[in-house]
Length: 104
Image (cartoon, rainbow, N blue to C red; front, top):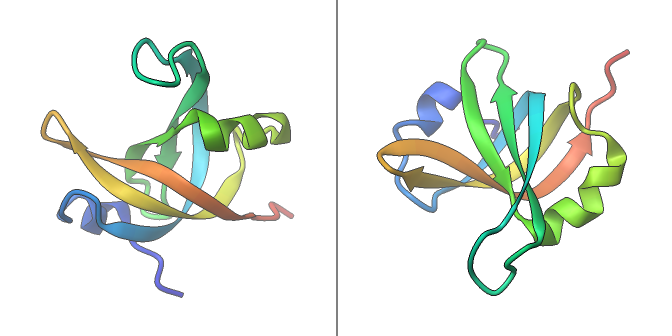
């Protein structure tokens, strides 16, 4: 299914597209301070994969406004993201949530 482990993601180059399956452990909503979307809400999430490795994912405002009503915190997701290397740390930027996985 092409899903990448976070351990492998941390070795990838900036802007590499990846597919993940992970639990959204926490969501912190913030507002952008600069740029063309100044003042719009976005989210920073902490994700944990099946190997118990964690990574941060940013959901920018254009995607977040469609997702924030869905209550994604605490839910497992399958998603496509891009690797972003910020201050030497690998993080993810969400492109699309393919599926909020059923926890039953």
